[in-house]
Picture 1: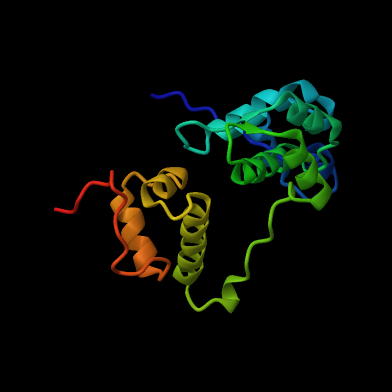
Picture 2: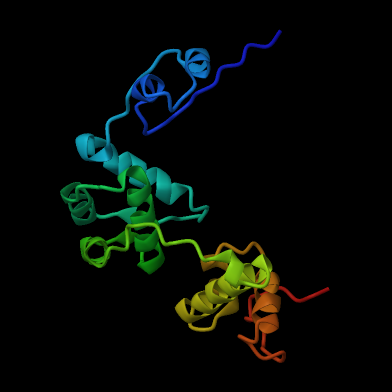
Length: 193
């Protein structure tokens, strides 16, 4: 018989909730095993660099930007009321704004000042006819941003935006009206066929 272990996480005080009758005592006894507490990020700032580096690596880019020493100092100066999620959102935003291979301190401080580290509210799906409309709008904006950053060079834009094929990127850009149907391929782009 296979051995299975579960890990449960909560921000709630389950002991108190059981006492108050807001959580089932029998369920609590079943899931209670070895409790441990992970302190908030503001109490373990030595983890910031590793968490940020991991978040950058998870973006799936071949060469994700690194954090400059100044950027790390700016991250250490922040209190992180949103904990690890806030750090990850900020690092993602900083990477999106970075054209080079290093995220600068000024970028991090600008984002912190603008409150960009907080997660964006989810759109109200009831106000959208179809969820696919949201996805298409998002994809179109990403492709447009890629073309802007790459000065209209399709192969470079495709690579920046994580597309495996420049042809796929080109077809989608044409479909969204971001490029004319007669848009020339980049000289180094492989032909169709």
